[in-house]
Image (cartoon, rainbow, N blue to C red; front, side, top):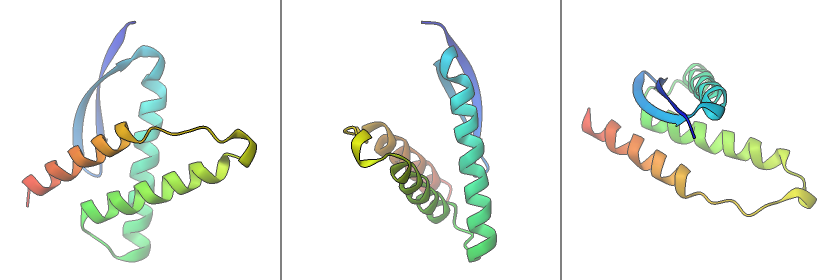
Length: 97
């Protein structure tokens, strides 16, 4: 499967990613959605800590995604990738403080 290199910026930090070409648009849109949510939270709650904003954004986006799945369509979700990504972001944010 062919991959493409992307530089995705989330909450002011740039992350180099290699993703399948078929996922490029999804990943780019997901990063834009995260950045939009972070900025809305920053404006509405006067929170400036990026780690707090990212945690709140993750919670909101996952809650929204969960609400979109009806009871009949529920599929077991593997949170490993999300947990790893959040852990990685948290470690990087800890490194700049």
